[in-house]
Image (cartoon, rainbow, N blue to C red; front, side, top):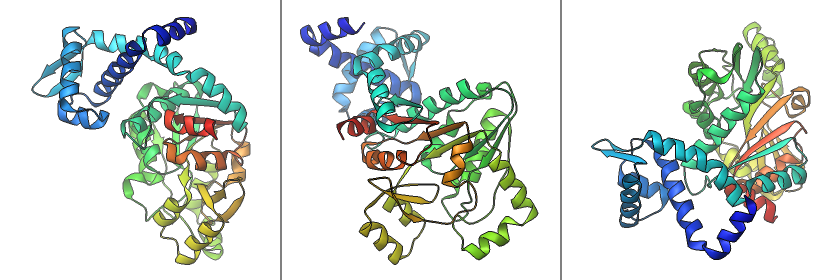
Length: 340
């Protein structure tokens, strides 16, 4: 396969460009269907004139349907899209990139999806899809799954289905987070994941950051203590990786904290810990729930983060991440990580 791709790249470079463009169009229609031409053009960054000719071709090939609701894939289009996935991965060299990143970061596995979250919101949907596939391979029997908040975890929730596992699942928030955007709170995401998989969830109604005195007091509350015990018993963790300053501002950190993070050149954040480019912890927010050192005892840790702008944050966090970590990222972040 690789030799064929190498020959095609040299003799028919336009063919590969056209193939990738049409693959992207089919992929986006599949994720957004039914979708109008204007909305699709904006998502792909194409003019409506260019998209019109491509859409006409795909319709002639019986790969898409067009009606008053918009464009959708035909059964033939869905089958072709599935067949193309492996070819496009080979074309872009994802398998080689994944192995290189796995060894560079010193973790269990890396999965790369097409696109860049910074340029297209649809790439986040691809991250969610890849995470769901990875979870399905790992989940056997009954499981407790701890989940952090954030828009990427919300995208994962959207891609889960009742077929995720043959055993019972219990979703628990990895940490408190009352006060954040309700849709991206860990409690809300756990609820959505449970709904999508026809399973159960628990909530943790505590602030995202607390003082040491309040932490000790809240942790002793019976209901909170029970949920914390479940969190500590989790055999899978799903979490995102944030840009340091963005996360600090989202938490409404004081000007003094923001100044400290800038002075210490913090680039990444996870579980309330802020890291500089060397992976050193430069600041920590006391949160109720999972702590960084808890991850070493959890067999399946899945980190999901994409976008070229997240490359520094990913690299910084991975210096502290347990070896059991599976990183699911996108093409934009992967390319920047490999370029150093």
